[in-house]
Image 1: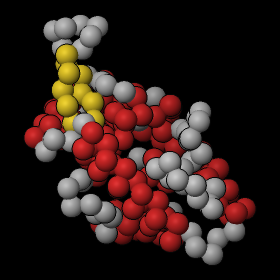
Image 2 (image 1 turned 135 degrees about the vertical axis):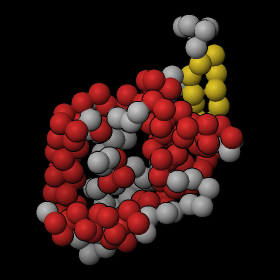
Image 3 (image 1 turned 30 degrees about the vertical axis):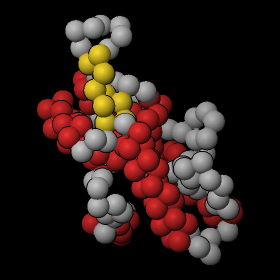
Image 4 (image 1 turned 90 degrees about the horizontal axis):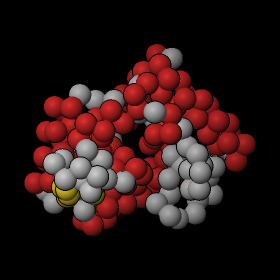
Length: 170
């Protein structure tokens, strides 16, 4: 486990894939893209962060034109946040680059090994969602439904079974 923790930390430190979008912004845009518009409170619950932290991160996304604030149609006194077109494009670019990076890491792996990794990561995601981030709801961390094959290829096909490694959110 210690070797895995060190390897993940090394990937995290070297993981800046795009100069205009940091990890926090990517996580929020990704979540909003998957769920649709959310209030700051709902977004904070979904990602398992404090509301004040998410408020600051969303302010940066709004300032940079990566997200938009809209009046909540169900309660006109409150607002919801959603990715802007620019935010979706940038998120797609980051997803593409992340997919390429993981495909490079998995070069030489067999389909069976990739499938095994996918099953193990899905189990880890479920454990994280039930023990570390109970408010984040399993649906956020455990792939289900169309296009959720433990992988996100940004709409492109891949020769690997494991694609959504970037959904592991410790």
